[in-house]
Length: 341
Image 1: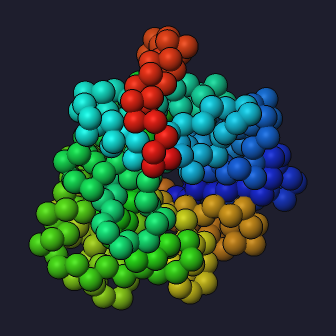
Image 2 (image 1 turned 180 degrees about the horizontal axis):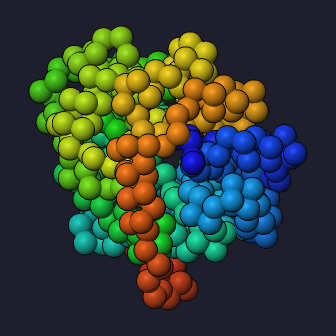
């Protein structure tokens, strides 16, 4: 059986302790960061090693490859991709071009990932930023109007899926209003519920059919004044599963982030009790990884079904002229230059 967690690792190869941990605890997936990446050949070997150690070819291998400042694979071995805000700028000039650029960019990203054996990209974002919010989302966002954000997020999703890469919708039900970087401390949003439904939640609703989503470590005081979405049964049941209507695999954001309180074990328990199907732990600290694993159940019931459905939804890459697509994307993006990059 497989346990309901996704783990990082420390370096560019697996050490003996990590191998033993993976073989004993059987995580559902892995997530890669810059500390795990040197060259294309090394990353491909690492992914193969992870799959062999897990004993499963269908193991999920995740990465955050958005473009802009959130890009784990970068020059000189991989291209630099534009941040999401540039698609929004192009969309304002020409809606069709904006959507085409978003789709082309992620189709190219998907080709990069597919060559390495990576199967999941933590995209798209449907966060809707507001004036005065923390810059942690900033130019990663596609815009400030829910319909526009949802449209570009769908194009981003299409590009990934056409390249055989699974998307993860984030940060549900919205990180755009956060007054702090949740990597550092817990943000609280005091916006009334009706306004949240009209803006933040509205951007996620058209994307409710995506196979996977990642929670926001954000308190929405109108719904739950104490717990962030990740550990709030109220928000998960009433908003994520209810108002938004998302029925796919729900994973926590990284439980090692400082927004959450308590021990790693307590955070893991709280996420599962609230209704998360899967817990994500990213920093590669083996002691913390063991705490997560000890509190993680075997995948079963609805969570097992959702995980299986997510993996089954991944198709083979469609035919694609890579050089032509890159030239077309560069021509499109030249219309907005590098403003906002």
